[in-house]
Amino acid sequence: MSLSRTSLTRNRRRTILKQTAALLACASLLSGCSLLPQKELNIQPPLVKPVAEKVDAIEVKKAAIESKFTGVATVASSNNVPLFYKESGRLKELYVKQGDKVKAGDLIAELDMGDFDLRMNLEKLNLERAQIELHSARVNGVTGTSLRMKEIDLEREQLMMDSLKEQYDSAKLISPISGEISYADVKSPGDGLNGYTPLVTIADPTKMWLVHTADDGKTLSAIQKDMQVAVTIDNNKYQGKVVQSPSDAPLTGNKDVDERNTRLLYIEITTKGAKLELGKSAEITISLQKHDNVIVIPKSGLRTYLGRTYVQVIDGDRRKEIDVQPGITTSTEVEIVKGLDPGKLVVLNN
View 1 (cartoon, one colour):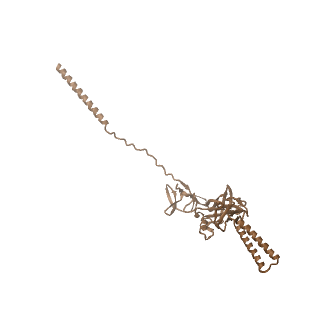
View 2: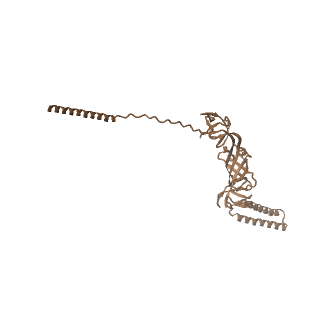
View 3: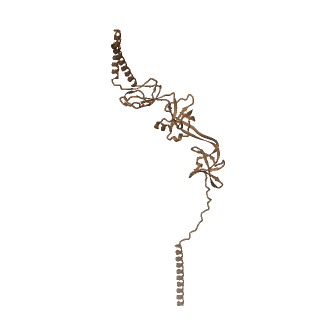
């Protein structure tokens, strides 16, 4: 009986050990499986509807277009009188400065004549003495050669006096007109002056015009004499006309003057009663070309490539290129003379 129980107990132990070993093996297998890489799920992205291309286009219409020249001019006198000495000398005094108003006959400047006053006074005495001697000779009945010698003495002294007076007058610059000093050289008493070099310039305020100076004469190439000009000075509106443009400027033979005239535009104010002030700035506008009821598109719609001029238009769901001929062109618009009809949608190159 005891042997039978002992055998049964051993069998149970073996069975428990086998079951435990089986459980440990399963646990080991399960833990090993957790170390293997998991298979990734391939998730497809959501379907997105393509965004339609945004096209900046404008419908072709007819309108007016005008090309204009705009710029700034300066009020100046059309009659400017330069004053200068014919001979070199030394300045005694300059009595005016730029901007001063002067009248005809006003003293502008004087040369330093040194002891000229003394020489003038001595010559007056010599002349007076010659006059007295000639008068005395005639009273005393002197004739012939003796009388002639007295006459020659008087003539000589008179010539000397006339010469001194001429020198005295030439040492003074006198204003020949009433006006404004538009230019005055910066000189001090004692400074040397060269002959025929303007010391001052007097502008005649009764004869005024506008002067525009261009950086590049090509910008004035389309402007012709007698073209109408809209003028604005201090918010006041005036009318004017072109009196000289580079295209009709006379040739002077002076290279510097002729070159300068290629960049100058002269305008006369035609509005009656216009009050102009020397040196004032004026805004000027000149209409060069104007066409009404023509095809006009934004300048950004015109394209060029390798000598070709064209536009892109919308044709259904695609773009189509059309060769065109441009006309008047401004800073923002362009006239299409040929190749484009109203109603088309032109793509802008923005």
